Length: 283
Image (cartoon, rainbow, N blue to C red; front, top):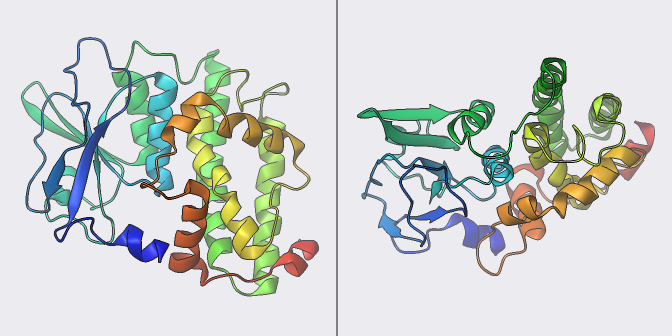
């Protein structure tokens, strides 16, 4: 029921909504402060105010909204129904994916995409906000190493585990993910509570969407992936309750974010519940 509700258009035509986050880059045009309905054939206007193609359940989008929140920045967002993409989407996202950002700069439309690229764009464009990757050159480089390794290994293992129905394969994948988490704990700031120290950074924003979605594996595979990782447990408790992060949890009305994730991943990837606790004991 929930999945059907989330995947269907809100009106008889596909609809999108433009919304804005609080705060704004100094000198930039102020975006609208309300939702605007647009039918599928209506192309959103491209102005000097950046506009991002968005979907609430996408972890790659979540990376960018987290960075925006940590930067205390504003951007207009077009909420895209990924099950019924509007015909105009390639004008804003060449591959038809989210997130993607477009705006006019010096009279030319700029089209930007790829979540990790957009994290750096947020840092560069909203220059007045808090620095997203503070520290010495070496500290910044170490932060980028964490982002690169997490994106290359942990993310793919998360999706493989959600899809996996074979116990031996699941145990192997879980062993690999635990190895990545062990390395991540060693690489994190020793006192925390966040990955690079006392305040959230780009590193947290890059890794958090999948760590926040570990509830999917907990509920659909009966596996506590963070068992035995006290630093990551501490990080998760601190990060998910941080005011910046709370602002980014924006499910549809009357939908619980965590349960919504479990239902959608269960329907789209996991094929429902399968107890993998025995496989986890072998990992």
